[in-house]
Image 1 (cartoon, one colour):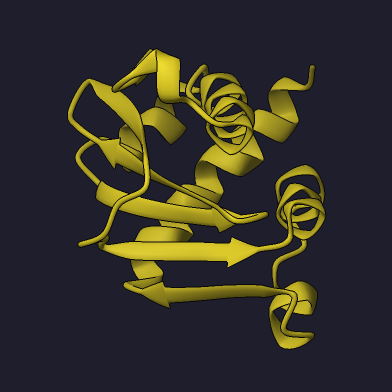
Image 2: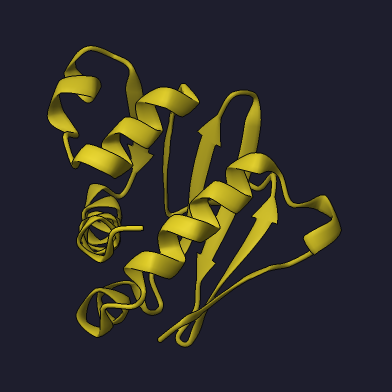
Amino acid sequence: MMEVRFADPSRATLLAHVFASILRRGMSDPAAAQAVAGLGRIGVQAAGMKITAEFLGDAVVLSVGGDGWRAWVGGDMSDLLGVCLSGAVIGPWLDGRVKWGGNPFALLKLLKILAAARRAGG
């Protein structure tokens, strides 16, 4: 299982903690963890918060802020959580509630982690 950790735990935001929890559940699936190993820097923006998830070979490091992302996703916290909990991406994207940029294939790999987290429950 890939480790999920904070670059600076004292600066971790609510968004970082929520995303870390989802990642940890999803990373319990070895196939999903393998899909995102070495994925690079992915940005997540919600509720005025911005984090970077850097997917390394054996760990994911979450940090506050960031730029130079390979891909990013953003929206209201409730809309992003809805995507994470339901897996429904197309509707919120078409409605403009969830936005994304960068490499779409990187974000598709991230969806494998979200699906694994849903299967893991909790």
